[in-house]
Image (cartoon, rainbow, N blue to C red; front, side, top):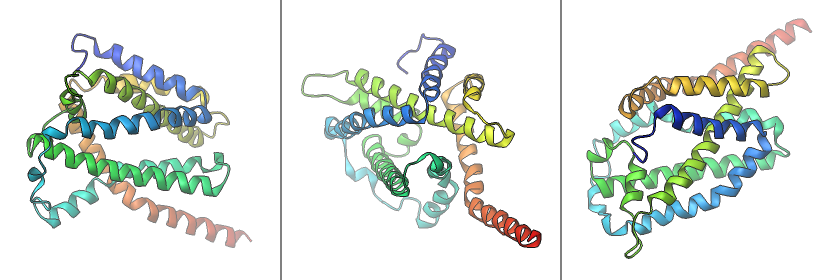
Length: 252
């Protein structure tokens, strides 16, 4: 959208390369980078709503229930995996100093994500209307191109820089968690050496999709399938815990 003439592999390598560098520096560095840029990102994100206020028409969000409560509940269940990252982050619990820090971080991150996601969904519909908002590939970037401060326009460059940094931090967490889980599966003592191969695989898999529309279709299928796994995950853990407890009792 912003670099139509730049080869896609170059963009992938730059983004994943930055994510790899952040992840390679360790969990503490990821946390520091996130805390450094999160306040800036949040301020600019909510300032964007002010900058496009003239283009917002809240009449477009009615009827609020849309196709009906039944459809909303069904779609909420099959898309529940978009909040599944909070469960994956629990794997980092041994690295957290206190239980209070883990609880406060999880509640703040999850709660704020839910609120901001719901708010911007409303803004997208209020600006682009429905079903146009559903067919826009990059709604946030479209909003940034519409933003103006008086006679000052072309604010998208600022939001592009902030979104790039946020994406790099986001993917660095994914790389770190992927290497951590893979090392546990392979029973390796160190998982940092796995970061580079996983970063390379991420670049290769990212180039499989020819365009954003195919990517969104694949992402939709992944979200729905992983939602089923996420819903079954507590029961799987309960069964494993019961089997382990029974095995310990029989051994004793």
